[in-house]
Length: 252
Image (cartoon, rainbow, N blue to C red; front, side, top):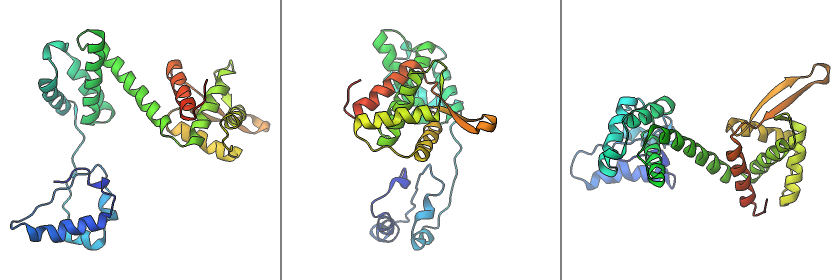
């Protein structure tokens, strides 16, 4: 049984060749290999000979529904949490949230663990309100991890958008304002700024990651312009900005 087989990277074909040709010779029994992956296309990258030898029989499993997730979460509670410390409805709520968004058991367990941590920190039971708070905290962690590991140019673009938004009273800015702030930030961190067109691609990427919202506005004979809106919670925006500063080792 090999879980997450799509993560096999180093000498993948050599590994598979050993698995399907050499290993059966060392085991005096009928060998059945079970591969598990979240990627439907992982066999497409195998050597055709290995793929042919495997004689793959694919089984596609549906994402966990709310009932499945409740069962998984209750098993975790029995092993790690005092059931008396969980208010009624908490397991059902976490399962419903997870099944509605992704059906991922690991993320559901992560939400349960975060809820337990926050409840223990506050000295309370795990309540429905704590679950909401934990979900928000996990979202913040996700955004910060994304920014922390993003390429330097994308981080600089995000910092430029934040700085330009701070200077406006309208809540939205144009691409020109964001680009000017981005160039100033690049000078501050000694990073070569990209062209305006390339900066537009960075803005589109930030939009894809839901760090900003952008849309194209028509101004009649004056042409079109892109409006950029930073609608993340203020506290999260400040954390993202300070995360970028920390990555570039500069002070606010």
